[in-house]
Length: 324
Image (spheres, rainbow, N blue to C red):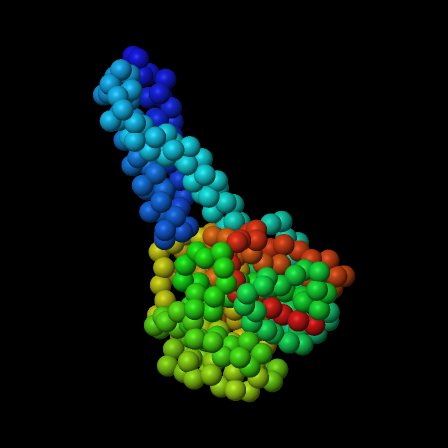
């Protein structure tokens, strides 16, 4: 042990870092990153045991060279995983936002919708941020990320789930049926999804049993749409549930007009739905708020763009865009 004391301390340090990574990833991203950091932690712990029980002379045997290489590569990769976990953690929090007005009910929100002018209004309640865009069109964009330089765009948020982390774009990787500009696409199959459509100036949310047909009709009529989990439909809760403690986002439709609603801080999903109900929201569809996917921004009436939350992510490939 004494001969390998420094090496053992190093592997103890990387093991502690990998445990931090596990805790962070488990809270926010329970998919392949969680399994990656778990394997990372197991190998780091194995490196610690190796240094404690195999003396330096035995370690230099040629037969143990592959073990040494794997353990040291893994100890370096801990820092790559640390970067991923820090990105995951920081991408959950809103940037500093300055609301235009405080409101307390959906009736006040409806009044703002009727009176609003150019750009996006940021409204707040005690628990929520509400973004109402005075839009003339909504589109579902897949493939190329919408640019802030395009001044015809006033808001951009992540929309549908994606099946896996792929740097290249494929419609097959977007979960569910989706349509853009009248073009219908069949994405990765998923059960129990509702839908949002925008056709001829009307925004609508559909429950599970009608969602597929709604997307197809939207495509036939030259509109757009995508599938996601139903949060509220006609005041009734959808079937989706989650035990994650995080920021949440929905696309809400009120009197045929769409707006985006975020939690101000992290909370449990049931608490979020209850907050929407208390505010008076009747129809709401989930928007993807996974780590990194939640890249979003809006344009104020003076033309300045404001980053809401997250940073651009290589693997995100679909967005809901509000246009002037």
